Length: 236
Image 1: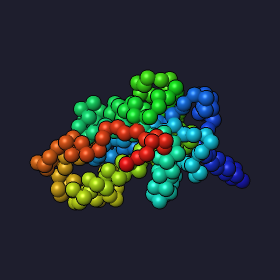
Image 2: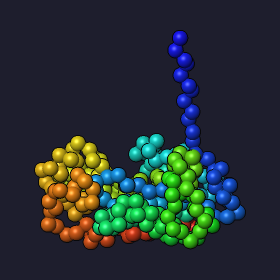
Image 3: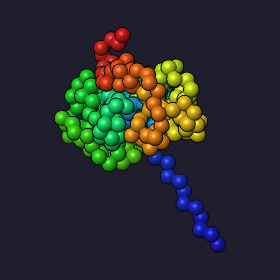
Image 4: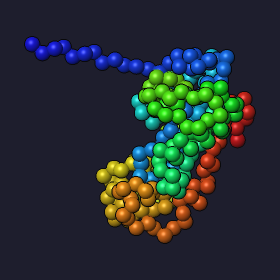
């Protein structure tokens, strides 16, 4: 007789990691990044300090939310929390490697917060160099509300950047796959070659010719490497 299947345990993020780190007495931020795997575009990180008295309902790992839900939560988080955003460009990714670039983007995101945190909760198994204590949390975007909020900010910010890049290079369909190596993207690369937004250090791109157009680094200057948001300060 077959064994009964184990019940699937569904976890949702909560505020326990933040409380253990001293919140709300101490400022605790969650940090996450988006864009480590794609063949094109920057890696974007976000740091978020939530107000435990005003937690946006429905916070969860960005990968578990629809695009519509992410957009709605993005606005709520920016209205109700302190937010810092940082990025590392394609040129930086190619020069120092994607792991180091991800750490750099996270450091920039924390530095961009309106207030300096006492502790940072980092999604993953390692932490970037920070001016505060830091704790890596494996699968943190599904366990910590602050990291979940950061995952939403990072994902929506990067997706919007890729949509803008798609307007300049429509042949690749960036607005549909956000730079990931889908079949459509790989076929476009074979036909058109790489554009300046492609990561030349990534294997599928390395052997391809690059269009002789303004460099990705200069084009990305329209996007600041870091920005901060404090709901107490009117935003433009």
